[in-house]
Length: 537
Image (tube, rainbow, N blue to C red; front, side, top):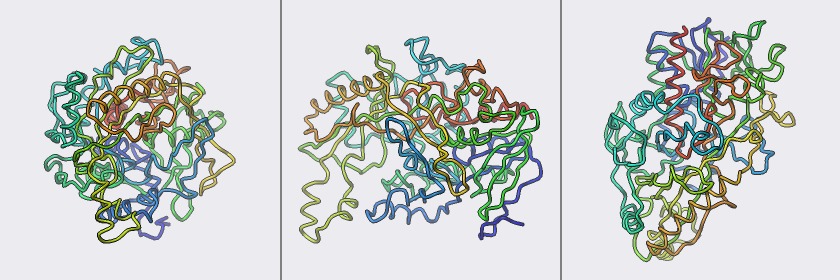
């Protein structure tokens, strides 16, 4: 039986392989590629479909037309992707993720910064949260390898960044026109600005062309200049890995002792279940689906869920929260000419404000509506529409920023047995709220943004801060890393304490959140996990 799902693809399991990777986003793709390159037999199981790169222009058009919902661009929603959010704040999980080969890099913004040295030492430095069991220096070579694998455009012009010896693989994108306006105001205020490392090609790299400026980076890059993990999946397949799509893993089975995983049980599109056996297993399905899978995999040997003797699987869920302010200037700003950020300031990251965490401030090139979106959503035509566009477009500016949450046990991912997915499994329930330190950090970010806007002379029209903030689509925590099996789920080698052949390559192992976009750290950790799996095979 092929279990093809009507598309002719063979989704039957391979005979026992060296490594089974669950998830084909950036972590799974990079781990699979590294292990396949080293001669190991690798199978990747991905819950979502393959998306044809030739369809991306059509997806771009769908994204900017108001008749289409945002989730439809990457086919999210419905019973397959059902979830709950029973905590203090609603968590819009389906807006945060893409299920499919490439994962959430299919719709991400593409900013890739390293965590600061201080992020690994938050308890020692600030007396809050916890320290990581590894230091920045431990990840430093993996950061460099991840930048090379992804293709990062950047410059060594950030005086606040952690140390590095090697240049970025690609030159940085030049500052946008609106960045130059902000730069003048920041200089008057003594705020240093610098470039943003981006996972998009400033020139041809690794078989992908340079950015051509569609401006629709979120939710889709039609040209392929922005990195997405399906590119690495293709490289992994060329190296010998086998990748199965549309095969959501239902549970992990262990031997009688419970000390080793023997198989990942997955469902094919025709509803049949199959067992993929392997010597080693790597979970790379993100900070929500990984704890869900572990909790679904309970057994006599693991009555509270697989690898959960600590009771911490799903605990310490974290997000980045958005702070922002924007408005209009009495001059042209060339808004939306660039669809991503080219300038930031990390001056307030390692700050000495009382009771405030790291703050990353951004200068947004995509402030205000684009003329295409405005025109498509208008009920005017001809000269009336043209007059409206001329009156309202081209004068918007905005600043954004990220702050991180403290890790708290009460913020968690658990199962909701009252709601099931299309295979009858309880859906993930994200329970989260904000702590006072996060609120203070948001307020401080807004205060700094307000000073810049005042200096620039902006007529401020909106502010997003402590009381109306939202998540940045960066879920972290839930299988935290540590040396003590009673207070963590995985060890510094990314191996679960309880199960000898089960590794986790994900933001779920983060101990603290920092305030940097997490994907580069996810990629570095995935390469580190792959090296340890390679050592054990």
